[in-house]
Image 1: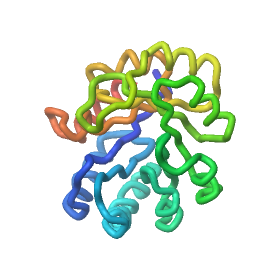
Image 2: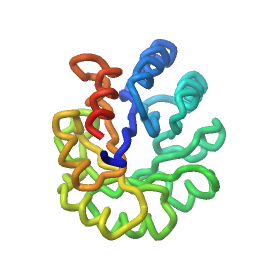
Image 3: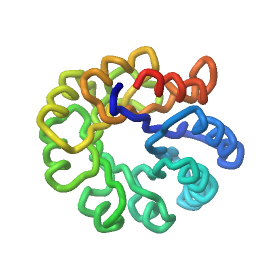
Image 4: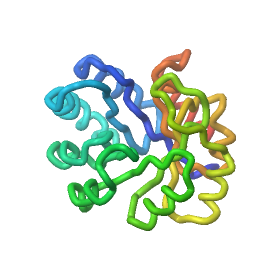
Length: 204
């Protein structure tokens, strides 16, 4: 039995009202720790609308609702947390906006960035991409040893991200990942997203 949990990431483009039903159904597949809204090239008002529709679905299922890149909107919209990349708002800005919220930081394949984020107080660090991914162009390729090193040395949880599927996940779980961040591996699963969540939970 592993302590690893699923961290769902939204598809890059959604119609919020239609997607709410899909999401609700997906979350019935089993334990999901959190859901990150990561939409590309849309206005602040569209993010607000998507959040207002989807946040109650996620929180109602007992998962944390996290917004990508935008601490200001996460605070304004009653989200549980924010995920910031190296090119987004700084950790300090994110923590100031969400003093009691979850703040996660992308660290690519860098031990140095991860140690800095952990020491600053990040709630988790994210490493990746571990596998080829179509969701976004990865800035780095991370090796599985990175997860082993981190889980042995540090208490701050780590998230593995990038091209993760039910088929390639076991090595990441074994290496000590606390969370697997999955987008296409759930939404494009051959038997549907709910089956993917079930399969990931069976793996854990």
